[in-house]
Length: 151
Image 1: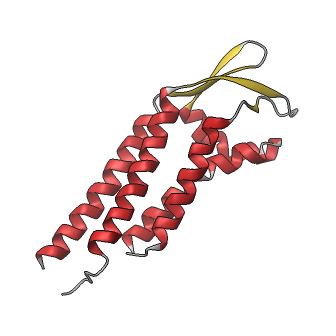
Image 2: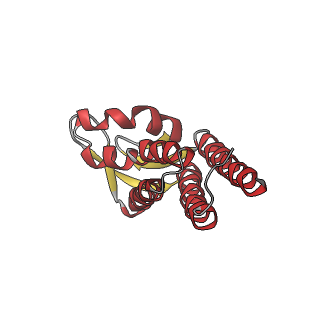
Image 3: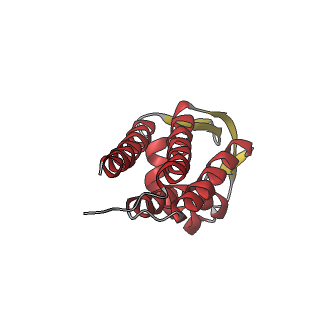
């Protein structure tokens, strides 16, 4: 019984920690780029408009944004004790890390690219939220996989 309580506490704390870090990331800038002058892209703007990037020709930008719904799906899988959560998290982490190697991003709907000048704190905090969720989920299933809920 005590292990079931610990299992639930670990799961809830992991989700709260990851979501708290994610929400914190939204308050910072994600990156700066050059397009008709230096522009900053806030993490909140990336999050809100990222789903629409594919409509303006930003297929790669949209793929990076998919890390967000993948993490949400993994949280639901984690809540339901499905080990599939680890696969969703790992995929999200790979997508998020891959952005760091980019040299340019879609800067306008016309398809013009802008050179990335710097990656800012918001990106790294966002990456930390995904990393915490990925490592925490892996640890959760390693530590609690044999424990089944009992009444």
